[in-house]
Length: 314
Length: 263
Image (tube, rainbow over all chains, first blue to last red; front, top):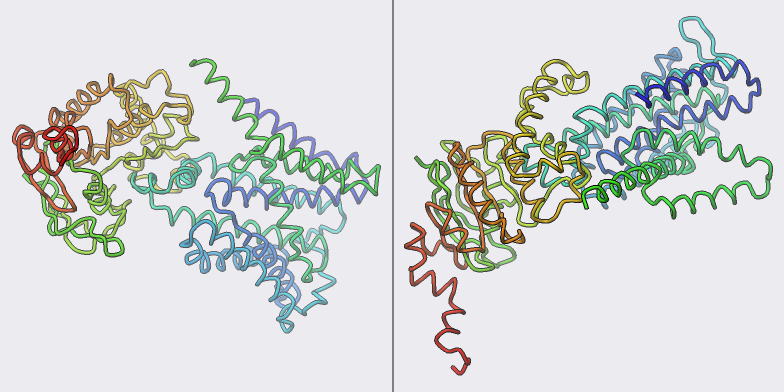
């Protein structure tokens, strides 16, 4: 109940934010935040719930970005169709690559997915006939949806906001369902899960494909915000951002990751008072946070509950 | 009636023959014990039966179904459940969640039913929760039902693992060392509990080191030695079988005859 109230309050505040904030810069930060929180939540599904540290998210982000840009420029598709195409392409690639990748063990999985992401970056740079190479695809059109143009930052803000609410809503319904429970069961003890009749592969593959689709869709929308896509879209900066949100929030906790995302989007901006030390302080905060709460924000609450229980039972 | 039939089972690891051409049966409705010295192939045998190891040769039948080549999850769904020697539970889940993770009560529920919380899911969930409550009551962990399983003692974790096998009506449950590491004062309680579950229709195959526990509890005992079936029979006969004593208690008997170790 308290969670529902707080969520409603946060949603209301975000819905009216553009009425009070007219700075394009702040709105642009918020737009990035909406897009990134979806990617972090998608990574959380794969890493936090299914227990698979997937660096392939960066690849799906890039595939989504390029797919949407190419669809709208070369394919003459509309904005919505391009974004759907981005999600679909990422999902199909995840489905085809996921089956062999998910058969590897956890360490090999990390390396293979990292290689996949690097490969995507290479393709973006070197498959010039399709991706235009290092120059990228500039001057993407203003996204229009049923004749409505998301031309101003305020309008794009609402577009990103709606996307985030929708995507997080889907993920929330999923991870709080029995499927979320089974994913966590597989993550904790795969042999036990199998001995109880759970087939791990379909669940892992499902998490991998859905995570890829949402990340691809997020990338597809984000290129319309940047109005250009080039190989820097596959910079490791994005992967690192998603991973920081997840680890800091607490892998496997939906709300932990959402809260950490909000905090970490705001933090670099709150530190703007000192341009020289800004990133130094940001890094320092990260290190201290990981030292004090090694399992993230959610881990702190979990440990507290555990200690209270132990005290009660002792 | 034969419930489980093992015929010519063999398994080697890099040339070491853990199980060699072993055949035995588990009869419906019994509590069958499987004993043997360390390294006699007990755990390998049940890993092969439950699909966690692929046997080199041999067939395994559950009732009239050949389960030799099925993966563990399919064998579980066919009605053969197991526990593990080094106890396995979901540490991050509470006791209720541990039991609700078992798939059997949700066999007819689809993924969409789960995500959309449709009635078919809610009905299955309600029944599973009731059943989990009963299982937890039966193993005596009621007080801890909302606690994360991580805070349980080793013996309590074994009881929780046992409770998980009671979430369905399995044809056969294989227990790998159910009382090893359990508080000795609780061992009789567990034997009594297993008898009760057995009376309600569950067949057990129990691997144990505790020979007294096995001979008191079981209707039929199988003895493995060096990967072979050495002897089988009623507990009384096994206790006095010379081959068994030599293989299983050989060292102690040696010590009895020659306490100072002079020979």
